[in-house]
Image (cartoon, rainbow over all chains, first blue to last red; front, side):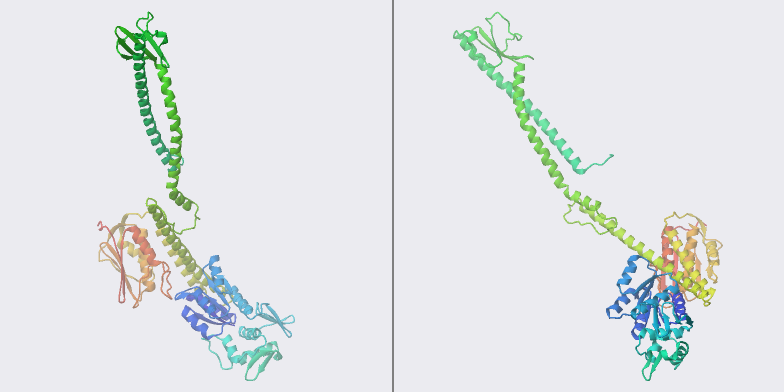
Length: 217
Length: 399
C-alpha cells in the first residue's frame, strides 16, 4: 500500500521509509508540513505516519485541517510526546492510532496496515476468497494448509485488490498504490505484477476488464 | 511568639484592654467624686441638724426628743457622759471613725456625729447601683468591638481562605476585587509569584517535552537501524551514527543540568591558552588557535565550566559554520569565530534550531548559562558571512 511518511528527523525518516519499503509499501517521505500537504493533496494514500513536531508547524494542526476538509485517510501519529494528554489530543484531532518513539518499526508497519484495513471496512485480518485465505495482518496467503509465498510488491497488488472489495481498480489506481513519487515505474509494471500474482494464486481469481482495470473475482 | 494567634483576637484583646483600663480610671474618678459629694451632702445635713437641735434645746425641748437623722449620735455639753469621738472645739471635725458637726450659742453647745461605717455603707449603696449599670454597658462595648473587628478583618479572612483552599496546581491569579488598600499589595505580589511559578512550570514542561523528543527520536532511529540489521539490511555504521547523536544529546543535557544545578563555580587561576589547547585537541578537525604569541593568559575562573563552554562554542561553529573555525585568546577574552551561510542566525532558545540542523539546539543555552554563572560578558555578532562569539572576563589577568 502507499504510505505518506511525515518525519522531520532525516535519519529516522530514512530508516523507517526503508523499513516500510522492504515490507512492500510505496513510501513518500516528507520532512515538513508544507511538503506533507502538497503530497497529501495529490496522492491517494492508504495510510499516513505523522510526526507532530514539524519545523514549519504542528502535525496536529495539519491533521485537524485535513479532517475538517473531510479527508478520512487513516493516520497513525508517531511522536516523542508520551503523556496521556498528548495521546488524547492526538486521537481527538482525528488520528486513528498513536505510537510513541522509540517505536518498533514492525509494530508501526502493522499498525499502518491495521488502520488501512479498518478504513476499508475489513476489520477482520483473515479473508477467504475462493480457495484462498488471505491474512492481511500478517501479509500471508494460503491455499488450504499450503502457504503461497509472495514478494512484497505482489502482496501489495493483492492487498489493493482485496481492499477494493470487488470494485475494479484501474492500472493508474494500482500504480498510485504501489509506487511512490520517486520510484521508477516501468510502463508495464502493473501488468507484470498481476501476471506473477495470477501464476501464484490462480489465474481465475483476478479478472481483467478490458479498458477498465482489474478486480478480484 | 510560638503557637498560632489571630489578628482579630489580638485586636479585640488590645481594644478591650484599652476600653477596660479607661473605664476603670473613669470609674475610680467617678467613685472618688461620688464619695466626696456624699461626704459634702452628709456634712451639710449634719450642720443643719446641729443648728436645728440647738434651736430646739434653746426652746426647752429635751435632748431625747430632738429628731435625728439615720446614723446620727447627739451630744450635748451639759451631759455628763463624754462624746464617743475625741473632744474638739472646731465647728466641723472628722476622725477615722466619726464625722462631727458642732453648734454653739449662748454658752450652749451640741455636737452631732455620724460614724464612718455608716457613711461607707451609704457610699457603697450608691456605688453599687453605679457599677450595676456600668457592667452591661461594658459587655455591650466588648461585643460591639468583637463584631466590628471581625467585620473589618473580613476581607483578610476571605483572602486567607481563598489561598488556603485553592488547589496545589491552581496557578490562576487571586482576585483583588473588593480588597482594601492594605491587602491589595499582598494579593498583587502573590499574583506576581503565581505568574512566575506558572512561567517556570510551563518552561519545565516544555523542556521535558523537548528533551524527550530529542532523546526519543535518535533512539527510534537506532531501533529502526537495528531492525534493518536483523532483517539483513542496513549497516552497523548507521546504528553507530544514531547512537553517536544520542550520546551527543545526552552529553549536552547533562552539561545543561550541571550548569543549572547552581553549584558554586570555583575561582582559581586558569591558563586560557592551555585550556584552549586541551579543548581543541578533542576535536578531530584542525582548528586555528590565535594565542597572541604569549605562553600564558591567566584569569580567575572555573576551568571545568570554561572547558564545557568553549567545547560547545567550537562544536556549534563546526556544526553550523561553513568555513574554518578560529579560536582567539586575548588578555581578558576568549572568542570563537567562523564563517557561516548568509542569513545565519544565532539561536539561543532551548531546543531552538534550524530546519535540517543535526545539532541539539542546546549549545548556546549551555554557553549562556555558564557565562552567567562565571560572571562573563557574552558578545555575539553575525555580520554577513562571519559569526563571532566572544567572552569577556571581568578581572584582568594576574600574569
